Image (cartoon, rainbow, N blue to C red; front, top):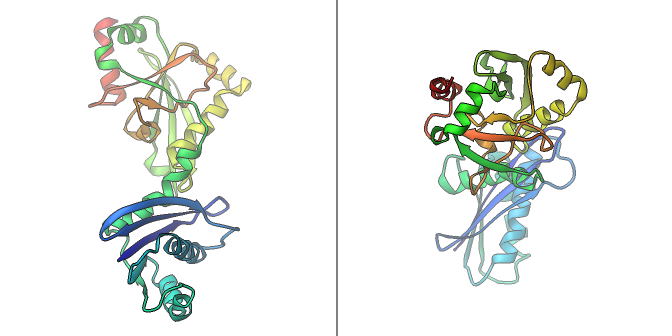
Length: 277
């Protein structure tokens, strides 16, 4: 038996993506993500495209299976394909094949995988350099540098009162060991696409590369060079593999990314740095 779970993520005015996972005999044999063709106008068009793509995968992976099941979490899209099931079966070069289109809740494990695949692909396709993440809990040199040399530490906070189910708002906080230097820059980021944290980081890097913005921050005592980006729970989505992470600071600025694997909060960082002041 061949099973294909498909889902899509509709992103208005942006690229939308399809995620699929294929199983044979209960074992996964394929996962993929692809862009929804053309410019879909709503979620239903995306789900119909997902089912159509799942059909193309069925043709690729079909062997001697007697049954093919294609799952999707849109009842309307599934009904549309159920209505033309007999005609679609005729396109397969085998007699006696049972082709089935079924609704399945997104919470089911394999459908959840397809949903995840429809959201994660744009993150991996971004060509953004990453840097090594250093743990400040075991680095006295980092803690003393922050405490004694008044290095600027950058981190993001979520702003609940400005966030909705369609957007997440981040506050850029820049502080030294002694005081907050800047916390008035807000970044409302629409959900979807490559991820809110990735897109927030992209916008902040752009702003921090702007000479006017940098000049305003310097007046407040902010120094980008030899600064630190603190990777907190709010920005853990920037963390990649092999202890690497994207930064919110421009790559042309010498800086380091730091975190604590257990307590990544700013409070923990400055509490640890206090004994070096």
